[in-house]
Image (tube, rainbow, N blue to C red; front, side, top):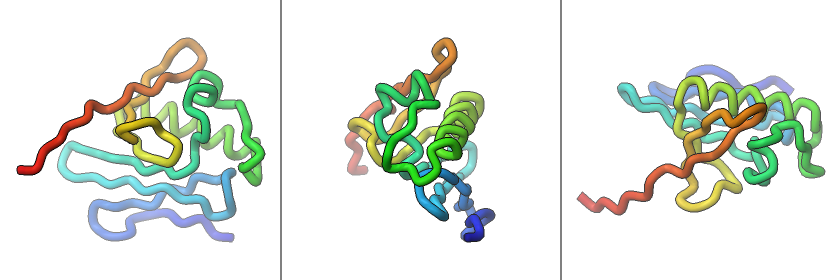
Length: 116
């Protein structure tokens, strides 16, 4: 199966995220200086897999590739200070990633209730 990659339409780029399922893809949404990455099922149990990205889940069809993808995306999120959204993240469902020792930690994005 060919990986999805590249610009889907202006401001939205497909990112191949191999390991979870064939063709697993995330999306980077950029506007000005702000970027959000929706990473789908890169991480299933943040409390376990962020400190130790090599922890595999039975749900991943290729556990080694999933672990490599997770480490790569966590490193990128921390280095580039990306806002992350995805499945299995605790409320409010958006995190920032920071390095902690050999692993990473999720810092929840502040919840804002704006109806302006």
